[in-house]
Image 1 (cartoon, rainbow, N blue to C red):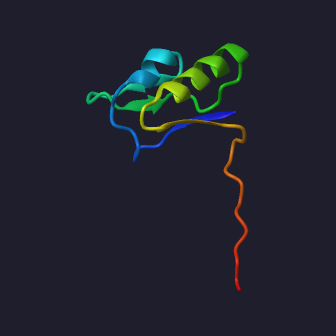
Image 2 (cartoon, one colour; image 1 turned 90 degrees about the vertical axis):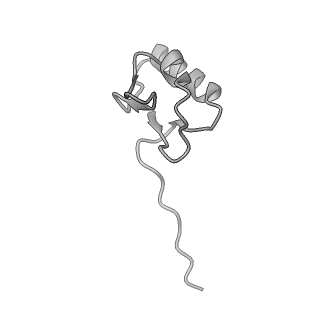
Length: 76
């Protein structure tokens, strides 16, 4: 599992830091930064998923894979 914050969606509500304080720090403007992009324990994963569900802009993302899957290229 990996955790990331989409900077184009983040509006600095800081809810991610509230729910996932172990893995997020806030900058001086209140925008979150992920400290470690892997949620390796079930406790951390549970907190990360709660943070993702609570983010009003969908900027906090928990994904199943460590790297994005490649999309097929259509040449036709």
